[in-house]
Amino acid sequence: MQNPNLAPVPELFVSYESAQKMKVEAGDLASHDLSPRQICDLELLMNGGFAPLKGFLGQDDYDGVVENMRLADGKLWPMPITLDVSEAFADKIETGQDIALRDQEGVILATMTVTDKWTPDKSREAEKVFGADDDAHPAVNYLHNQARKVYLGGPVTGIQPPVHYDFRARRDTPNELRAYFRKMGWRRVVAFQTRNPLHRAHQELTFRAAKDTQANLLIHPVVGMTKPGDVDHFTRVRCYEAVLDKYPAATTTMSLLPLAMRMAGPREAVWHGLIRKNYGVTHFIVGRDHAGPGKNSAGEDFYGPYDAQELFKEHAEEMGIEMVPFKHMVYVQERAQYEPADEIEEGVTVLNISGTELRRRLQEGLEIPDWFSFPEVVQELRKTRPPRSQQGFTVFLTGLSGSGKSTIANALMVKLMELGGRPVTLLDGDIVRKNLSSELGFSKEHRDLNIRRIGYVASEITKNGGIAICAPIAPYGTTRRAVREEIEQYGAFCEVHVATPLEECEARDRKGLYKLAREGKIKEFTGISDPYDEPKDPEVRVNTVNVDVDHCAHQVLLKLESMGLIAG
Ligand code: PPS
Image (cartoon, rainbow, N blue to C red; front, side, top):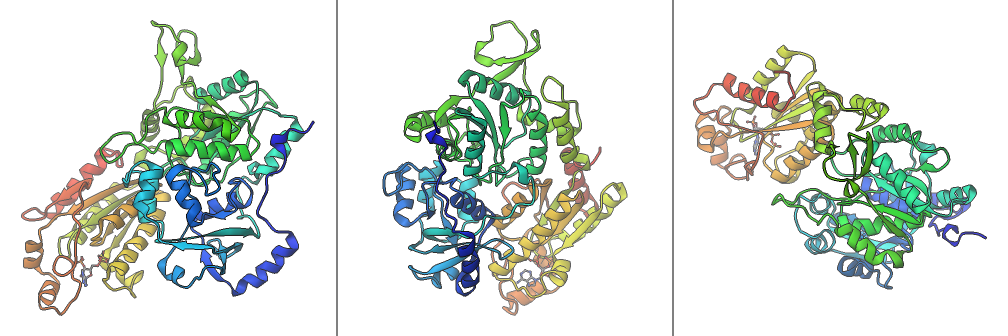
């Protein structure tokens, strides 16, 4: 008998012939260029991973999801899947109109018939969905600082899935995985969601989960978007492949999920369950602090450690997927094996290495013991995460015009070049404005664009193991934060506030610009007629009054040394 769980899920794609025709006709439609997150969402909408959704949410569905995790027809759905667009684009769109959805290279992936257009209350969305309107939460930060103002909703017609060039053999749609389970005769499948490399404890717990539930195991890692700062998915997939050999042959498989996570804890767990159900899974492992976003801006956890398990349990029956609570596994030295922490008697030696401790060991090139991980995994991680003193990083000096940023940046560059080992690039405000941003002025929009360009170049330098020294005014805190986040994906970010007071900068007036600004001959001049947000928590703050440049540059060097970025 066919397992009803494994019948195909509805996809949103049209036939090949229709798709060819639509591609041509879509040339006349208004086009929206999808963001990386929207591309992930669209892929799962089209391939049935987000069934029962048939497109980006309309306003009634959105309100229901935000308020009580239900679509307008009452079906359970905990996460708003929304298409955010700019006001300028929204102004051109009428409801009832079809739009083309394109990837970042302009390839058309789908069309959408716009049924709804509205400006959401993002603070309400943050409070209700993520539990707090606090930018320390990655999804709230995304909502306020990256997602655009207006939402469009409506059914999607799929033309083609986004193209992936990496790990093709490991990517499956829900129907492909269902077909695989059918072919293998797997009637019970337990899925393990992860965004981290697997070490011995994870291998042991997943193995036990499969044994206890008498199910086959699906390692189902997220390779869309995870938490900023996570290990890149290329490295992780190589690590997972190394671990796959450690399971009994033919009991376990691995497939990659192109999901953009929101780190929404309890709601995210339910969302993950519904997605896995679409992939044909019968059991789902939910751990302590599942999809946790870390600490809020007051330094406390956003969610309780078992909130995700509670919410999942409440809805498991309705979802039609069983929860397997994560057992916290620890290493018992005397018996040289992993065991569930709650089954261990007193008096034995329990060993554990936290995520933070692991990162420290990798950063400092220290030993990672065999009982903790597999040598192949450690080797992969070491390749991607060389010790900090060999990684790229960015020093970002910010301060008023004439504060001394360029002078300190130049001195710092020479000192770092003297130390050697990594190429050093200086992205000084004036140099950038001449070579990269010559068409820009000093409106907020143009300054932000200028800083984003600097951030982009610095992130590329950092990613490739170099040192970038940036020295623009960069007056806006939110833009500096966005640059920090972009760079911290690849290496360290050291913000230096050159805190020379306005009076001093104006008294020096090295370029004669303050005088012109006071006379109103230069508009939007930072500190005089334009704002400067003082950095609240920079890595270094230097004041150049009565202090020589050499000393200021040395203060930055000392900080870089204490951050482990240069050898002492
Ligand atoms: S920003 O805000 O970060 O994009 O500015 P930045 O690229 O660093 O450019 C600052 C330099 O441009 C000159 N200049 C002005 N600065 C501030 N406000 C206005 N309106 C302005 N007009 C011209 C000024 O020389 C700045 O150089 P520095 O090295 O900071 O003195």
